[in-house]
Length: 256
Image 1 (cartoon, helix red, strand yellow):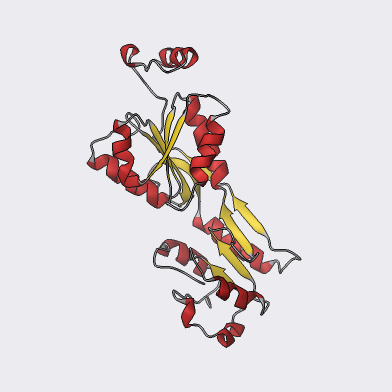
Image 2 (image 1 turned 135 degrees about the vertical axis):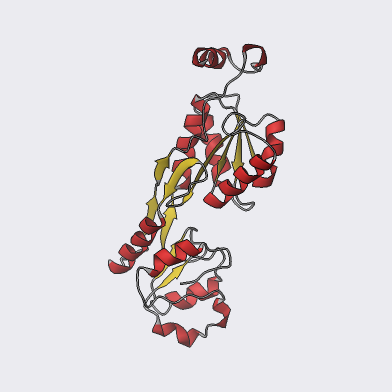
């Protein structure tokens, strides 16, 4: 099993339940190609495993299952979190609740959450705004009008909640917080979450079913968990932004 320093240890423990013979590796550059033949399969949990290492596995007929990241150069089996589905459902809930300024809190190299928010919000309104930012900048974004955010992982949600607490910003009164990610308990906020045990079971199923003609990808949708960190936007009548449409104003007033 290939890891990197940021891999969640709880996630590793769940994968070790697949086989007591499971070995872990943080630096694949130290493994000689001839040494690979002793492995029956490789589970890739790292974010940037070298493509040459993946190629060395495939030419030897060793099954590879990428977990959490889509394959880049070579086609391999995969178990992925359906981030787009989760973000779409959360965006719909937020937009119907009156939110128009939504933050996408995700890794700097990713745009999945931001693009999904834009695509979903455009189906319900025209006056939406989506900004990408880090968890540390969420509190400052509230000062500029942001009313909701969607995080791309449990870790990002935890950092966001901590930053908001330090800034004295109430959740969900001042900012609704939601996330998509892997977690079994101690959810930091509302959102769609996949139990790591389900993730490990999906990997085991791929490895046990043998190798089909083409690699298999399993998408995990997650379960909606309500932690009370999201809610409809609320304004007093004299604070309702002039830019909001008449229909949205009516919805807010009715809700009050």
